[in-house]
Image (cartoon, rainbow, N blue to C red; front, top):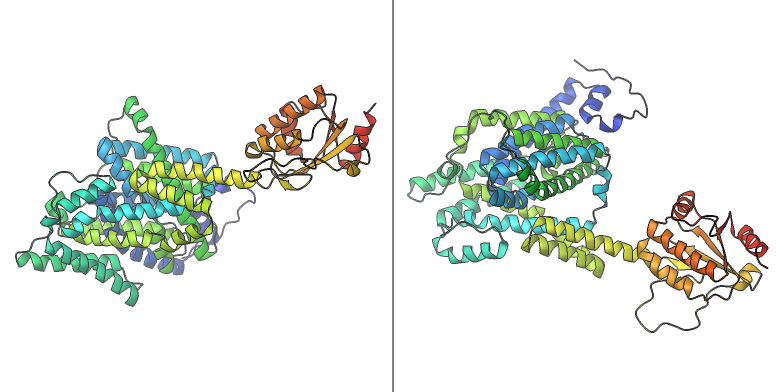
Length: 569
């Protein structure tokens, strides 16, 4: 059976929110494509099962919460998403944030924050703000991704070594490492051996059989190895001994106790989940686009991510997002459409229903081994070194984001990185704004030179008229310095022509600065004529009070000079 293509009206206002699954069915979907998607979905499910349990466990939740997230969140992301290849579920990038929320607010607090974040993400998508996420500076992304990798690895040391802590494991990195060092005498050799077997299996399988489900095989092999050790009198802690096993079905959907006070208290956490989920899912979609040559719909994708987080929370899952590693695995396995993601979710559900009793025997050291490899892969070591070499500004943004993520928290790291990155961008943009002489308006620190060549009288053909040309974006980062340069001209000319043909953008601060300068020149009897300027720049000037009552306007410099001369006595 083949589903025949259905023509789509061009330029439909709803096309930006049409799920890619619908687009796939419109194109025509047959048995051959389904076979490829089913194979890819089964393959990625083999990766998702152990990874979902490991991520949930590292986040401070029970392993089944990760499986619920993979099933419900993964299904909704593929059903409603704006990417053909996105595979959704719990992500390693969320471990630090989720663990922090559970520690401070409890698991119910996480569910409420996830619900709130889902609503926020739907709102971001419907308002078509998905493209804004793309403007997060690259050093910020590298910094917080590498920082998360460090924290994930540190969180697995206890299980990898089988250490028994005297008190609850601290969440902060330095106290955590201190507690591990103090309890190092309780290291369990059997757990260490189990973890090493898991890591070695993953590495070997990736080199020799890269298309095999290495994570699943490694977990099974490490579990069998741990069972042998247990029979020899060397027990290793398992999911069953710590969590009591995994339920063999999905729970009934339900809402935690919600109050207005809890919503207000959880607002920062919900914002952090929404921000991180948006970044992670759209990064994953971009990676998928690069691997396949397709294009995703960012706003549709965010709406789907929001729905997935709401659904996951209702079923007792943790935060869901698009996952780069599982998405790439699905593409390499031959996926052609979102059907692969739907099959992946259904296979995870089937495995949970059938094999839940076996999961109780999985050693925690095996799951820690999976996350140790994930954290190593997540750490963008080459990109980190490259950014450090690019420029001091980018290096500062990178190190600030990385350091704050590791030693404070993820939200602070991202916020500080974005602010520093924005300031660096504004400094760079302001440094390219020039006045007539093409000299930078942001000179290096030092004594101010005297006798600046303010303008070229010959350009106007009359010593009484000065012609000035501004070039570059005239925004708040450049306005004060630009107007300072303009004021150094002195007031000897009787008229000044400001040529704005080279100004592509002007914000309210720049317009306000020009308004103040024009008013000051007018009080001293100097006529001001503005030439050129894009419609947007001229509209901003008029809205800021720079209109015909203050200055004159002309289409170009010759007309502006003529207008200036005509007004002279």
